[in-house]
Amino acid sequence: MSAVAGWIRPWYPAGLVGHISRDCPELLKHVSEPVDGSGWLDPDQAVRCATCMPPWNAECRACHSVMSEEWQEDEPFSEADANRWKRKHRCPPDVHVIPPPRPKTSQTPAGQVLLPLL
Ligand SMILES: [Zn+2]
Ligand SMILES: [Zn+2]
Image 1: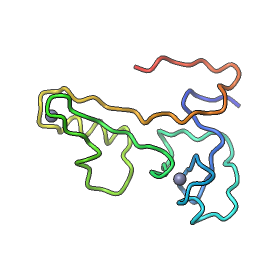
Image 2: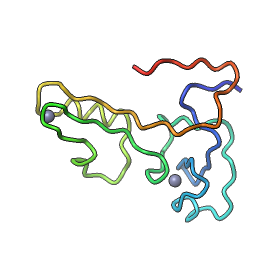
Image 3: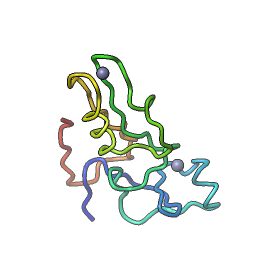
Image 4: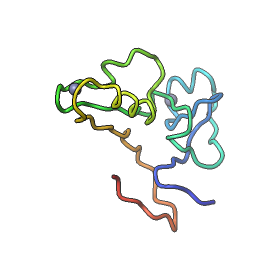
């Protein structure tokens, strides 16, 4: 099986939501005995659990507004949401989209090439 940098394993499915912590309280609400999901969890595609997987964020260095503080919805925001917030932001473009910190995976799969973060 091949994997892409940043994909996560093991992970634990609960309905349509992917969790990365076996002890996540949201996971245990739905599944009493978590089982590993098959394959890898792509954090940019999956419906992520906001409790155990940090969301994307964006901040403006001109006015110090932070997307997560202005966001009105319950859903954890995705990269697309962060880019939308950046486009709509009132200031001249000094907005930086912040990827979620990657949880530590146990090891880099053999043969995987790590791409530099842009
Ligand atoms: Zn979770
Ligand atoms: Zn601003």
